[in-house]
Length: 50
Length: 501
Image 1 (cartoon, rainbow over the protein chains, first blue to last red):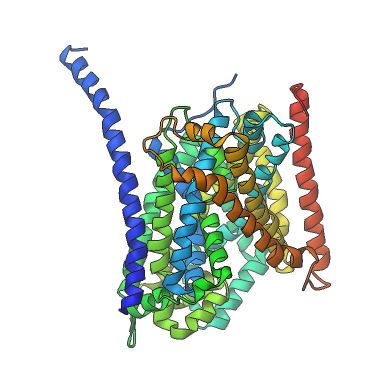
Image 2 (cartoon, rainbow over the protein chains, first blue to last red; image 1 turned 135 degrees about the vertical axis):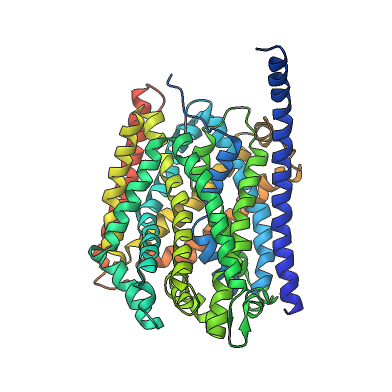
């Protein structure tokens, strides 16, 4: 592949992939943070036999 | 007060907004624009427009929508009125009802072609056409003689759209996007893999990618290329239509919008740049070589409905690949078309307090009546007329109004705080400056360019034949009356409530 075409392909794909990684990493991180207390409550309730 | 519907999950609304944004244009319009406007170099103005126009407008629309939702308003007249207590605000909001409805009047017919072509791919009827002339004739016959088949596909598509909307936000739109978007991604990746393994004589996908991505730096010195890039970003992200405004109104007050808006934009860009940029043009180049440029100049329907079937004809399992391609276009079109109807349905539900079924029925009736000219007079220039008023002019004006309300009428500092309520990310401060100054100026430039380039010739009926004149004038009068009718509806509602007219 011609080098200048390859550079623009990698540049364009790279920008989009990095943006998606940033977004979905943060979404997963927030989701994990929100779900942790919920799971803890569920575990406590289970331990208490409720 | 009646309880408004809510999105089921955060991922649900991200996929719904992405589904609205990912449409037929991602797979056909984008690669065509890249090929004709400097190849890889086009991506420089494209990404700059994404940064200073696309992302800021997404945040603006999500913020205004969520804000209006807390007052039980889901469409632009009510949302604008809840933010700006000027009597003109609700009337400016009418543009946000008019635009999406007008787009639907013709989009649903185009969407139904994909369904028809998927059917003809499987039955083998489509790929029987072995040369460009017979393929063009097949398309013309399909489009211009709707009662020969196209009308039935239109009816199926039309009914499916309204059925999903009748199911509601969470059980209808959210569900269909949660199923449709992953299918779209799988189909897209499958098709790209197929293109990457194609060969015709000496030509492989590498030649196709070279053709598409080879930068022509002279192109970015032309203002036209910058405006084309801005236009592409504008259309692809579904901003300025009023859809995001409505979708965001079904969010809780403390739901994140900063990260969600960015994520749905990022998802749309994945479908556009990575999948859309790797399929149509590279595949066409493998089989048609340098002719691809003139094919792209022939427009997106030529590319998608004439050239692609000719490519499929030359490859093993062509009927199946053709079927998958048109299913992909149909799903992309479907998740977009349901979204452009929701502002009108919200308007009837929230402002008139109609039930869901009554709101869906009234919207369906309006759309059915207005779709008929787009179907039966498509060759008389009616679709171009609808596309200019609803799909171009209304969008830019509406986006400009939104950004002015966000940055100037509501103070930018207040808007910034509003945007950050419940936010999962902190948006860099320089976007304040971009939203306040750069985005509106950029929009004004786009508006002036389009009005001069397309609007004035269209307004003075330049190049319209005597035969088409009554149809064009007829649809223009009908659209004008429709706009006035929407204004009177808003006036009636506010009068009934005893509020300022």
